[in-house]
Amino acid sequence: MLVVRRMWIALVALVLGAGLLASPAVAGDPPISLPSSPTGLKAPVDLPDEVDPASPYLPQTSCSPLDMPGALMLRDLVLETYGEGRSGAISRGCTEGVSEHSDGRAWDWIVDVDDKQEKAAAADFISWVTRNDGRNARRLGIMYVIYNKKIWAVYNTKAGWRPSYGHTDHVHVSLSWNGARGNVSFWTGEVSRTDYGPCVRFSGTYAARTGSPRTGDCPAVAPLVARTSMGDRQYGRTGGTVEKAQGLLKVARTGRFDAATWTAVRRYQRAHDIPYTGVLDQPTWASLSPGSLTYRAVKGYTKAEAIAYGIEHYSGSAITRGRVAKAVVFLQTALGLPVADRNGFYDSVTLAAVKQVQEDAGMSRDGVVRGAEWQAMADALD
Ligand SMILES: [Zn+2]
Image (cartoon, rainbow, N blue to C red; front, side):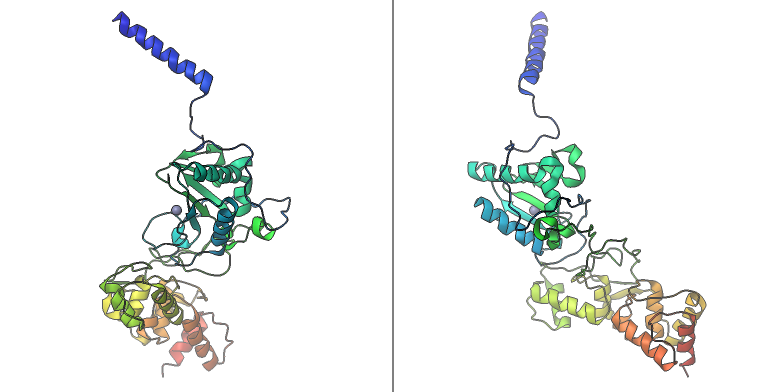
């Protein structure tokens, strides 16, 4: 008994002593030891005194096979600067949860912790990125970095390096939208407002990509106005359902959701006023394959009935371009648009039809649907 207690005392003393002498690893410590004066990357422009705002966490919302320009520039500069490791993926198939690879704004640098030179290069890079409260991460629009089972995030620098998983053979770098577009001071010499990225328009679908940054709030997410028996098919997927879509889209029936299919889906979505997500989502299937419909917001309504419903329910409101809602399906039905175009999204196809109604009624062609437009549709019935 006494022996056991003595052993315990000795053990406690050993642990405490080791703690005092060598300061053991604590939460927040880096995943590997980092140099205190790293070489880092050299910016191609003169840097302003002002530093870009730290990006908030902006998780992936879209599905795109395109590598974003900022990710490509970072990849090239890192490989050129260090000459170590090799490049892994930027964009990937959109089958995974939260990596930003599906947005084309994350990059994997293949550098192994078990390779001395590669590890030293990774250490220099992540030391340079994370030092001074992430000053260089902010300049490059880096959101977070993962290496050797640890994650560091520019939106949570106080926590330092937190536990993560894997990534012993590569550094994962996720970029903000500004970083991904190359719209940050490291590349341009100017600080830009935060770009919060594209918006999801129908719930449960991917976001439609736009070329312009978003600095305000997203419009409210609308519930689906149509549902079908078809599930999502996106870039990278294979199988008979993809082949069926390729037949409907009139592209080569390879059975693989390839780049040509992605382009064809977006072209179809644009032509039919569907948010152009590049994904065969519910709004797209509802348009492409009406036979697969299991629910539509205004199923069974005739044109006259939809107009009557609109006069009763929407006369007091204004329906404008860009709107996504059940009201838009009533509008599209009232306008007599083809079934494939009754998708609840007000863009160019619907706009052209609304302007025609306004022109025929001698009204100003502003594309906004109010009580007068519903009445004009009723008057035009016979
Ligand atoms: Zn990655």
